[in-house]
Every structure is written in C-alpha cells, then in structure tokens.
Image (cartoon, helix red, strand yellow):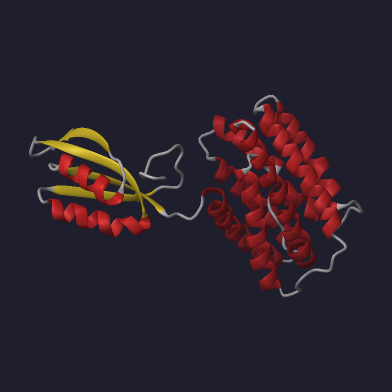
Length: 281
C-alpha cells in the first residue's frame, strides 16, 4: 500500500467517525432540548419542527445547492469527501433519532452536545471534508471579500440563532450561541491539536553558540537570518526555531547562559506542516 492510498483510507476513517459522532451529538443532546447547530444543519433543525421530514433527509436536500455551487470551484476530492460525510451524517441522524435522549438537563445538553459535536466536526475537517454546505460557500466568498471564512460563518450562524431565539424563545437562542462557542473551541483542538507548540525568534550576537546549544540540549534545529540594529548598526544573528511548551524553560536557560546581548520573542503556533525537527523524531 503506497503512502497516498494509506492517507486516503485514514482520511475516510476520520470522515466516517466524525460524521457518526456529530450525528450522535445532534440526536442525543441538541435536538431533544431545542439547542440548535449553526449553518445548514441549524436551518434544518428549525425547519424540522414545522415540516414532517426526517432531519437527515432535510440536511441532504438543503446542502445539495451549496455542493453544486462548489463543484466547479473546489477540488473534486473535496466535494467527494463532503458528499460522503453528509450521507453518513444524515443516515446516522436517522438511526439515532428513535434512541432516547441521554439528558433533559439543558446545561448538560449544551455542554456535552457541544463537545461531541466539536469532536465530530473536527474529525471530519481533519479528514478533509465538511458537514455543512455553508462552509463551502464561506470558503468561496472569503476568496473574493476581505472577510475570513470564520467571520462569514459566524455572521451566518448569529442570524440563525437570532431566528431560533425568536421562534423558540430567547433562552434557546442564547443556549445555542453558547453551544456554538464551545463547539468552535473543541473543533480547533481536534483539528490542529492542543496549542502545545511555540515559535521562538531570538535576536542575538551569539548566534552560533546558541544554535549549537539548542541543537545539543533540545535536539532542535534553527533557521539563521541576518539583521542589523537600527540604533547600534551592529550586525545581528536572528534565529528561528519551533519548540514545545515544555521546552521553553530549558530554552530560556540556554539563552541566559550564552551571555552576550539577546532579545527573544515567543509566540503560539497553530499548525506545523512538514518535518521541522527533532533528532530521533
């Protein structure tokens, strides 16, 4: 089995598992307690209270126009994965629908529903798919407008929650908005992992010494750049490296023990692509 085939299989495992977990969250926590998801799914949940059509079928029907719009604009594999995810999600909502809800406590429903939904959607995103057609449109709009995909989705969802609040009570709209914020954080954690990675930029006149010590003690390589002080006009070494949160303390000690003049900036890294790193990894 070649690498591409293996990656494709893994991505579809993520898509399948994520779709099942998201459907479980909807039918066992959110739908019975009138807590609404965002996007197309949220619209379908609202309509489902007035139209005698299965939620899973509504999700597929209303998502079709969004998928058709994205068919020519986005990659073929992306659309295939999106369709697959939606089908599994819709089928599983139908399977979970007759199962009694796990709780009628609204706080528990919001909390656990948001966590499970975030895990499910996050896994689908890791697999390269989506569970909501509005995300496809948001991606396309963000390419034309000076607004991020996340902002477009947020605006769309706020409108949905406002409608839900007007129809089912203000408290349901607020609970749904709370659920959305929890879900968004869980999605980030599942999709890109815990924010355990730090980028460090070191401006120093001891570049070679620091680079050798960082590699020796932490096993991390660094990228060298050259700079010049605005006031001193002295040439400076600029080192860039990526470390884990647990290594920050040791890195600070290395910088302090190196002597000379050094200035460091530490920032969060949301994602690393490729292999920057550690001997033995």
